[in-house]
Length: 52
Image (cartoon, rainbow, N blue to C red; front, top):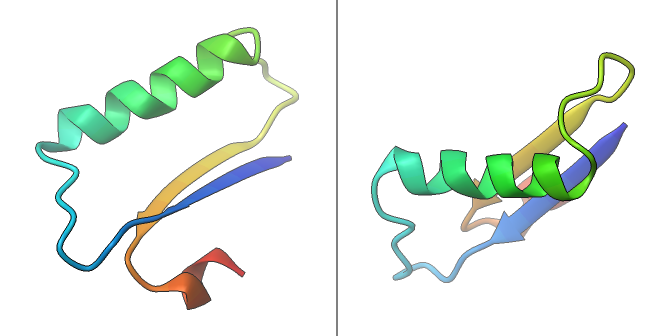
C-alpha cells in the first residue's frame, strides 16, 4: 500500500483533471508500472486534514 498526498495552496490550481492523471501515471511508472499486488493512492487537497 502506497499513499501520496499533495497538499496544495488554497489559490493553487492543478488545472485540468488530465494533469492529475498524468502525475498519477508518472508516479506509477516510477514505481515500476502497474502491479496487481500494489495499492497506489494519489490524492490532491488544499486541506491538510485529508492527508493524515
